[in-house]
Amino acid sequence: MYHALNEFFLFLPLGTVKQKIMLGLKLPTDPRWVNIVEKNIDEILTDHAYCEQKAASTAISLIIGFPEYPELIEEMIALSLEEMGHFKMVHDRIIARGQTLGRDRKDEYVLELLKFFPKGGSRTTQLVHRLLYAALIEARSCERFRLLSEQLEDRDLANFYHKLMISEASHYTMFLKFARQYGDRTDVDEKWEGLLEYEAEIMKGLGTKGRVHG
Image (cartoon, rainbow, N blue to C red; front, side, top):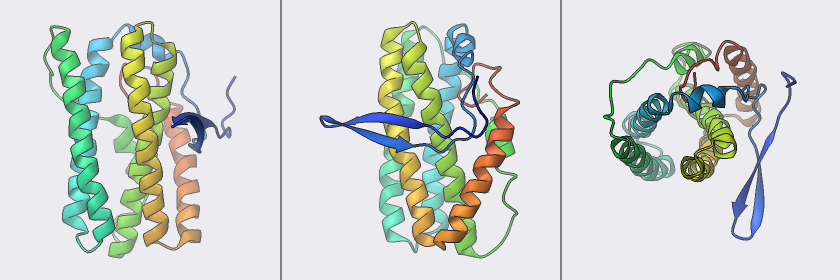
């Protein structure tokens, strides 16, 4: 049984040394979610492809919305290119399976998550909130990809998700770093903790669909 306040780690290879990354998530995904995915591989690949496209769009929107932060801009340029590269990788797998991309679906998880912070505030506040949202989405994606990498019977697909898991972990830490860099550290950490608690409540109602966040 999983405890709702359990914070857990990923151990990722970094050269010849394993790097410990604390995701901070309060509620792990029910591992039975992978069983649902196994029966809906085509569905989750389409959903995953659109998640990568939306991640690229998020990076581009941060470039457009906050051009006065050169370090952020440089990282978002690289991220948008990387995420579209991931989109192509997933799309290639969809085509190889004899399928087509299909239409986008609403991401119930993200829609609920974006309700946490109030609208408005200073530009700095808005930036911090967007960075924290992005960090948490990446952290949850990383955790889900870890499950797929460990439990999918299709080992080729499992290895694919292992590689993506490593990328998502670096994205999560990057967004959180920028939030702490541009905002007041104490305030940002309090907001991050509150967002993590809120996300855990959202997760209690998910895990029943073959979606990356569903």
